[in-house]
Image (cartoon, rainbow, N blue to C red; front, side, top):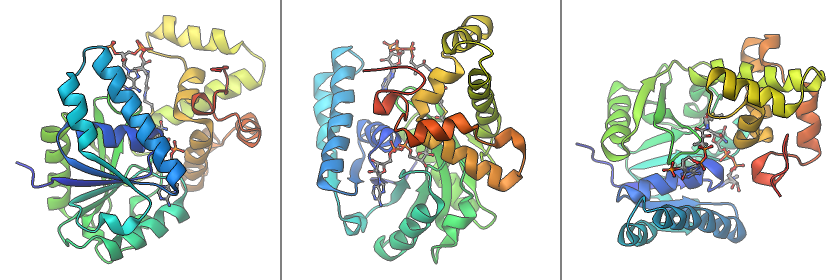
Length: 286
Ligand SMILES: C[C@H](O)CC(=O)SCCNC(=O)CCNC(=O)[C@H](O)C(C)(C)COP(=O)(O)OP(=O)(O)OC[C@H]1O[C@@H](n2cnc3c(N)ncnc32)[C@H](O)[C@@H]1OP(=O)(O)O
Ligand SMILES: NC(=O)c1ccc[n+]([C@@H]2O[C@H](COP(=O)([O-])OP(=O)(O)OC[C@H]3O[C@@H](n4cnc5c(N)ncnc54)[C@H](O)[C@@H]3O)[C@@H](O)[C@H]2O)c1
């Protein structure tokens, strides 16, 4: 049994919206914290839109959709997360930003039993835990995109996360959210991104070198290896800014060329080509 009922999600972008949605659908009381009223409205639209699409497709009843919407609140004040049992931070992949949020959470969240989790893809959990006075309550809870579809959650304890925190997070993810969990050590990229990110970067390098077209690279992996989507489509889905930040923090940790972001990735981010979320990346979604 899980004792977690009140959940906070910080950041209602691609991942935060998905995390909030699956928690609300599980009947939990969810507050999403964003940077501005406009960003909070965008988060609400994203989550409500996804719930509406789910109901239209018959994946949940209209009553369940309405119940999920009623479980969601939106705020721009982190202080509103004071009574949460679990907070999942899902802001941009930036170590300084995340550490400052964990420092704030330590001040705001009242229950000393509360779990402070990060959805980071690659930033060491120990760095975030060190920004708090309760590092034993801090761990990585890494969801996958799109959150309502992907079954996996990676649990990432730091060297000082308590076993009780890991067990409570595992029980919550399994029993409440219906996710499968794996456990990874606190090394940049954990299990999945340590394998996936070099592959995605290789796809970008192959395209950058002119070796093959984007379509042929993607078709190669879809039809040749039965991947659901090719590396460039998947990079667009993840977000090219996010992929670049993940590659940078993994390169920072390992100093291996395998993790070095190709120049084209940086140029695309500089040009505002962030992938599907901005309407344009390796493909045009407009
Ligand atoms: C970088 C990070 O740190 C870690 C990561 O997250 S890495 C990214 C991991 N994710 C992946 O690898 C995703 C790989 N791609 C896929 O699994 C699939 O292509 C996909 C699920 C995204 C889309 O599937 P596809 O068959 O191409 O499209 P589509 O038919 O529209 O969707 C399949 C099902 O997923 C559902 N779906 C797709 N996107 C969804 C979303 N955002 N929310 C809810 N449901 C969604 C659809 O409704 C559909 O359900 P149905 O079969 O019951 O009707
Ligand atoms: N995109 C993916 O496929 C994916 C998958 C797994 C994990 N992640 C990780 O999840 C995190 C979020 O990624 P994303 O793709 O959702 O990014 P995103 O850019 O879509 O969303 C980030 C959101 O955080 C908000 N934000 C920024 N600063 C904030 C603050 N101080 N308080 C509240 N909200 C704030 C932004 O307004 C934005 O809506 C990153 O750590 C990323 O590495 C991403």
